[in-house]
Length: 260
Image (cartoon, rainbow, N blue to C red):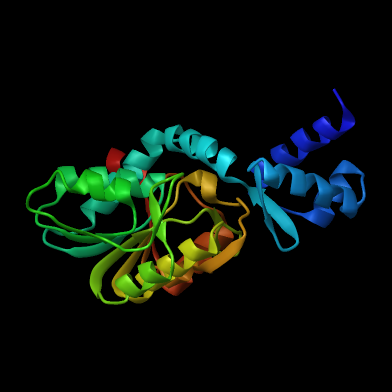
């Protein structure tokens, strides 16, 4: 295999593993110059395998679609437990925001089975489709640009739409959670939407399976202490648990709650 092809495969593998890779770090791990990495990234961007950002690269559209389907099938049981626990914390006839992500789609499925008379604003066309099966639900979908990979809707128009509402609950996820509780995502437009949902909700729930902890991402979304409760599927780091306790953030381990 030609050295360039092997290098390209290694670059894609590193970006896929880490979500985002700085050029300098890629150069160090591949033992080549940053200029070589930049040329490689430009070629991979032309093939839509990567997306160039200032100082580094993330997955491009072609690989995002593949990874989304893998993520959708990953930890399905754990996500279902998280979703059931969240649905149990939301009363009938509540108003809420639901954002983008496979865990949030699981929440939508749980709500349809457990709750009555909900009013939901979402920027996720898959969530809207799931919820529309209930004739007693009011489902509002935001304006904006649809992202083909996951049916998410983002953009300035999406934020403007959300800012017209004040709801009881916002149920959100994050692509990555660092050890200090900082929340990250890969798309700055999606982050703007989620921040608007957080600002316009009286109660904020974070749904995050165990794969999200320690996973790096690109755009800062906020801090875990800005939420009222964290719903996850396994025990978290002691330092982070203490931070949540000090901030008065409830931590719900979904599988334990269901088993108990």
